[in-house]
Structures are given as C-alpha cells and as structure tokens.
Length: 172
Image (cartoon, rainbow, N blue to C red):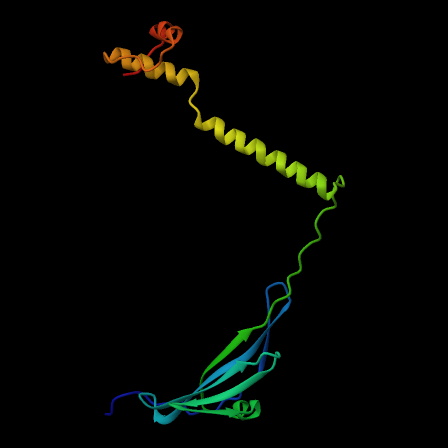
C-alpha cells in the first residue's frame, strides 16, 4: 500500500463576493482576495501556485498569478475560472455601524465657556494631586514621636509639636 492520501479532485466554483448575514440581520460583504491552487495527483505531492489581488491607488484591483519566481498579470475572469482551488481568501468589506443618536444637551455652552470649565477642572485635579504629595501635620508628629522613642534627635525644630507628640500613641 502506498504512502499518502488521495486527493479530492472535485472541481468547485467560487464567487467573487460572499454576502453573509450577521446576527442582527445586516449583511457582511466579503471579497475574494486570493486563491491557492494545487496541481498534482496526490495530497502528498504536487505544486502550488497562487492568485492574489493587489489594490491600486484609485480603488481598483489588479490580479496576479504567482508560480515560484514567475509573476504575471491576469484578469479577474481568469481567476474565477480556476477549478483546482485549494484555499480561498476573502477580505471583509466595512460593516456599517448603526449607532444611536446622542442625547440632546441640557444646556448650551459656548466654546469659550467649555474651554474655561475644562481649565478649571484641570487646575482642581492638579491641586488635588499636589495636596496628596505633601505630608499632613499628623504624619510629621508620628515621625517625631517615633524618633524620640528610638532615642534619636527630633527631626523638627518646632517645640510645640514635640510637646504634643508625647501624648500620641504609636504602634511599634
């Protein structure tokens, strides 16, 4: 018994365009962009060639047949006549998005007013960000208290904070 499987030799026709429905009943359009052809008598040997569609700058397309190092221009009609297709490649065209309309604005604001409101929000955000970076008075009291308990010198020159820090509790 020989190695390898037998090749299915049934010729198939394939369309230039596929219109497939989406789940919401819209159609999704796919255009043929490439075909791989297998030439040979078995599934384990033979030769492959390809037809590819190259977009042109003006929105049109040009088809090419690639066979090893040989490349030639061909017509779309030549591509669609091929009956030994092994692989078909389709590219989806744009699906139209149907988005709901945005709700109407409750108040009309001029461009200048919108810009000022945005600047005020940005200034508040910067101020909030900066205030989170500066230590609070209670956190510096805890540092001073912690240093005193360890026997180190106070880190602040304020005498009022060192006298009040003796009553604060520390969790060491």
